[in-house]
Length: 153
Image: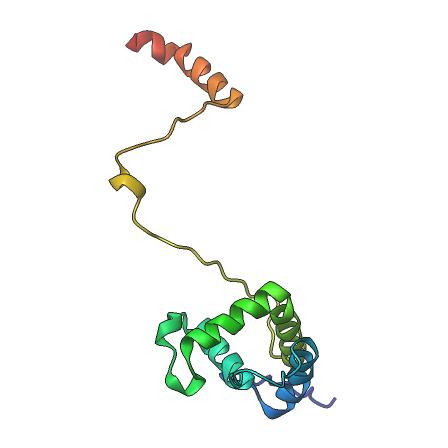
């Protein structure tokens, strides 16, 4: 009986920059939504901006700490905000995910949670009113009427 071949999956490297093939599919989406203007200031290189956004999302750095290779950090951030507001980033991201999924590079079982820890407002001294729910009122009544409460009371 012949042995079964063992299938070895090689994980893909994390992307830090848009490959040429992916850029050829992303650029028409941007050009359709934002056609070039004949007057005014030249806009930044969108490919560098997307690479900067990917860098920002992967590292978690602040926008003003983007390396200069991605262009002006405020311009990259401005385009990011514009693309999010216009729904364009969602289309771009979906296209990138489909490219990675076709290559078997997306692990849909993996999940992450993000959180933020910060200082409490007012140095933690002021508290809001805690409203009791019906369930907590019932638990309180039950605990006060317990035999242990009678011994303590």
